[in-house]
Image (cartoon, rainbow, N blue to C red; front, top):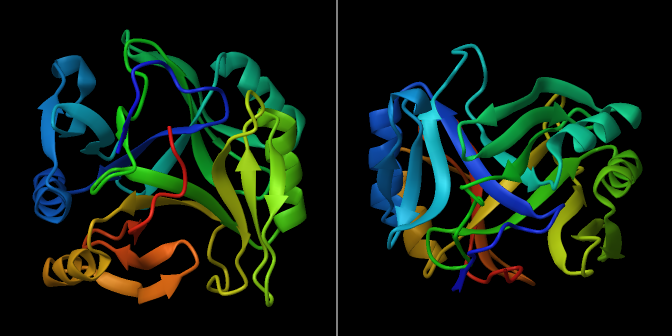
Length: 260
């Protein structure tokens, strides 16, 4: 388990959140799956909730702002200056979906699509640093981009966030871990995903740690989820990829990929 009290260094996947059609159902699902409880904001927060473990933030849940949008976990990458990062996004082929705006005193954010169309958030910490607890059951432990346009995606994140890469290619599996510029620590991944459905979007996938992947996956299925990738062993630990009842996809794995 790791806790974080200072803002995350630029380029780190610092937060994930989920917009849903049925917020009470989502709260119930993740409470039963991961043991989350929730801290509600005031009326200005628009129903947005901080999911917590032992009083520390692990993720966000809220009602969709647009009911026509898909239900997805959004990965937010830390930035020291959202406005500057957004200019860099636009300069190298990305697009802004939501221009920078303040979230009360919590921070400043934007939503963007990278040069291969994958959507991600950008977070500049204020009073809210993002995830305060990681790498334990029910908390975030890894984030990775799944794409068919591997070289273009690598170039985009190197240009915008200063990533360097460690290649992990084996038996047709093409993957790179992304190292943040400030200290060279591995904080995420980019995967050439040759098994993505035809027409499916390039996307960021959030992984949550589990203390017993088989049991967590079975619980998720009992709660109405589908196992898109059934429980299996991998070099990084036992894992599965699940689709929750409202459609969001996430991974579970029993070995953290990174430390705070």
